[in-house]
Image (cartoon, rainbow, N blue to C red; front, side, top):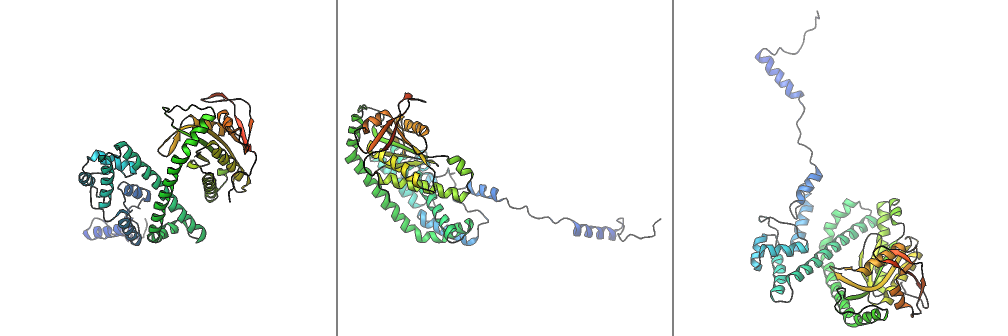
Length: 403
């Protein structure tokens, strides 16, 4: 039998039970609050519009609150039913306009709106009541503003953040925090620039409609197109694509920053060339740009300039391209119709550095000495059957001059 005595009191006496309980508390695992899940916290914060996550530092929270009051015209104080009632329309109609501009879905209890929101809604409602717009057109205009400004804001924020990362040796997180301090001084200048650009773009659109539309229709008729005034595709335009060669394989070998620089250079250079050529950039889709021009000659010059400039750029791969003259439908800032589809199909058929066009466009351009058109093999194209592609290349003259 062991002669050692245990130092642990027996648990069958009041004193020993008390000591045992005390020791148990001392050695018990400490209960701690569960760690916050930042993704869950963010998801919960995002469920309510314009909420700031709870762990946000006080200085950033105060800056965001001050920026909000400045940007949206004051303190949020109105609910959706109140704003709709003051505008004299049903909540259903108001929600259609708010959804078009990009507002989140709200409950009746959420205080989201300011007097400025009330004025904006009343403006659109007034245009409908006065007969200047239909409700459908008002919704379309709201959607155009919402979608374009949403993309513009994201673009501007990322440009400012990238600049601070590249030139001030900041991390992404530091740059985004610093942006809160920069924005108050930038808001007036960017706002003025937005209004200035919108007016200039609208003026350019007016001139295109008034001065160049008839020339476009004449060129379409010259090429053998049908000038039926009742066509559902009313606009005769040159539609062009330019597509970076081997983009997918290149992007897999690049880090995030290098890929971003390549895409940004491709987009900015494309936009510049299209603008210099008198065209309009419809949209960019990663490795591809879609543009339109008022005449087949303008479209052809842009297509050749894009191919030539990217061929000479050591930072970018070659492009393949196509340009097709025909009728299109323009809706929601985008374009639709067989002409767009034909241009896309021809782009996929083009070899690196090549620009293709179809027989109608080639017939329109054949008497212009600035262009050389070379017939290619007749090819079956999905949705169009067998077609005769033509390679478009430079003829006389220097083409577009891009600084």
